[in-house]
Image (cartoon, rainbow, N blue to C red; front, top):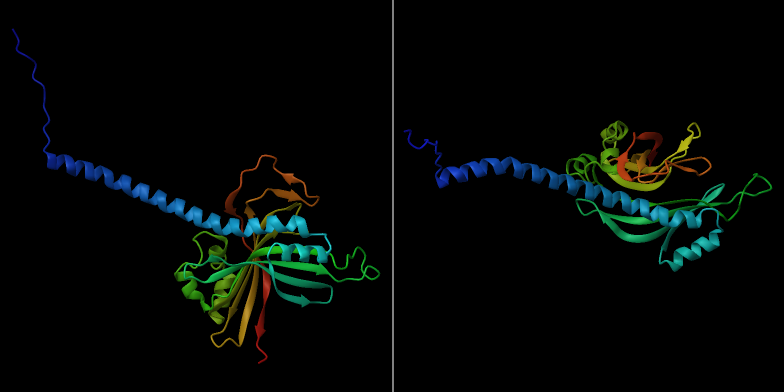
Length: 267
């Protein structure tokens, strides 16, 4: 007769078991940490982009095409305070403050939430289709004066990595201008339709102004950019939006540089 079958028995000490568990948990912990960082990054981008976008969407439909007196009154009722007015040949630009220090950069630089409103000043007898004292356009967004070295702003990630401003500061035109004018003097980020007469579609996106200046502040360069976003569906020139089924995201298209101008102080 054969005896009982012999089974191979594995024996582990408690120390060996702890070593195995530790080795297995390390990569799992690293993956979990990376996922946490990715979620934190997406949340930071979303907070910045949504703050700008939501301000524009809340104001623009109620203002464009309406008499300025009515729109101005609605701003005051909402608690927005007047900041400045700039009269030009055909229009007047009015800036109102929606909320001070609405967003803080990584170094604590405050960004005010504002709305810039352009009002028609043209005479209907001279310009066909003119609507004097009526709102032509509205731009809501953030403005700030960091007043720090451009290199420092980039190094310390003044804006969330992957956000519209973070990517804008990395554009070659900004890098080239910063070599001559190293101080990041002022930024303005607004949200609106991007109108290009050569395109059949009109996407929503961000408009960015970057103002760089010399260390002594006597000269500088202002650059203008736009980039299509994916927070709202694209529309055609008649205002018809597509696609019908749309899921918003923080994806950005290619940046477009609209040019800029150098300035010099007359003081």
